[in-house]
Amino acid sequence: MAKTFTFELVSPERLLLSEEVEQVVIPGTEGEMTVMAEHAPVMTGIKPGVITVVRAGSEREQFVVFGGFADITPDGCRLLAESATRVKELDRADLARRIEEVRAEVQGARDHETRTKAEEFLGQLTTLEGALLPA
Image (cartoon, rainbow, N blue to C red):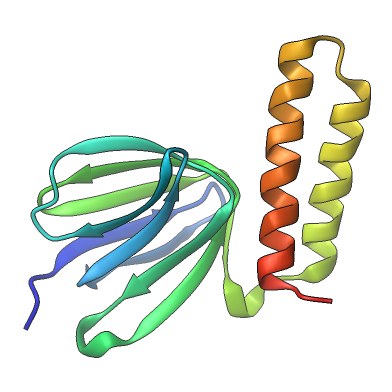
């Protein structure tokens, strides 16, 4: 049996998950990473994407996150998300609304840095939309 660690997924609205898990795959800003028990300490930014939680017995659950950061230690991982929901509860209209809001930010950007960040976020959201909600 694989070792477990405590994983917490927290959004501003609520604590979505707090339990012992075998592994968590997170969409880090530097790339996807798998967290397991006794992981080296690290903090990483989180980009919009899917988190996959693997419980004992290989039971899986997926969550969609819209940015945030993760604090990883040898005995746990706490992910503070800007917004998060279970994949099975994802609302297509909400995702489309978020994409339109970011498109408006791109159009209204007053400087290059703001525009570049908004364009990057828009790209991440549209990639997420394509992966989760095929037409």
